[in-house]
Image (cartoon, rainbow, N blue to C red; front, side, top):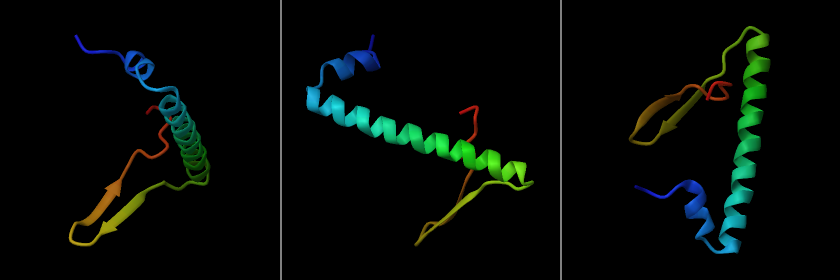
Length: 70
């Protein structure tokens, strides 16, 4: 059986764990901002979409950004 997330983190050096924790905190704030933005846009009657166009890759439509259920 594989190791848990907590076991993996516990095996890392303290400095690495702190760096991971700091990045996780930033990402959590970004997700909360997307949720707030989605609520604002939907309350105004709109929809939130992100369209990405990459050279040689075409257009990608990202959906589900800021969904509260995710």
